[in-house]
Amino acid sequence: MALLLASNNAGKLREVRALLADIAVVAPAALGLELDVEESGQTFAANAQLKARAYAAASGQIALADDSGLEVNALGGAPGIYSARYGGPDLDDAGRCQLLLTQLAPYPEPAQRRARFRCVLCAVSPDGRQCRAEGTCEGRIAPAPAGTNGFGYDPVFFVPAYAKTMAQLDPQVKNRLSHRAEALAAMRPLLANTFPELALAR
Image 1 (cartoon, one colour):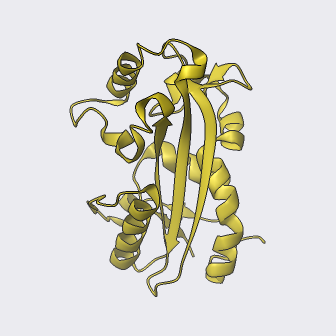
Image 2 (spheres, rainbow, N blue to C red):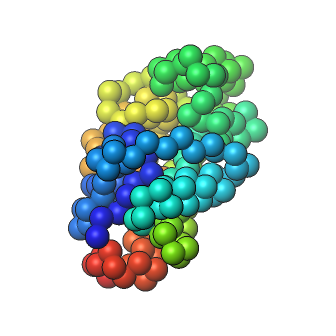
């Protein structure tokens, strides 16, 4: 049985398929499924659950949803759950990165620019079984974008251990240390125990 990823985001699909390589992961587009789930929750966990429930109900398949984003200490945890919509609908990834850098201009020191990526995953079956896992990746906001890999805020998220931004890292390295990688590693045994029909390797 395939696992339905509750997103058509190509970057997320690549990462999830790489990290769950032993099962088939399909995107809604492959099923001709179009859903617009209102992310009305006040936490990453609530939004992930909303999306997973909606996609499981609409598809009749086990659905895996994530809600993830960037939390910047100097901005009180913003953009947080609004990361994908930060600055309004007219901004693309590059525009959101630039807005973030502008807002952090008063905080030039590395210690003032601490941040983390957070990812919460929720998987739900049509019969109501569910499990949830979370992962984080600590770092700081770089003074300027760098790198062409990844997506979202990767060009401005600096990983001190590698002295590179996420967008400068080889995808295989990123898949070992990212917030989504940590969440998926925690989720793997939960998927196997909660949904044995997925036949995941235990």
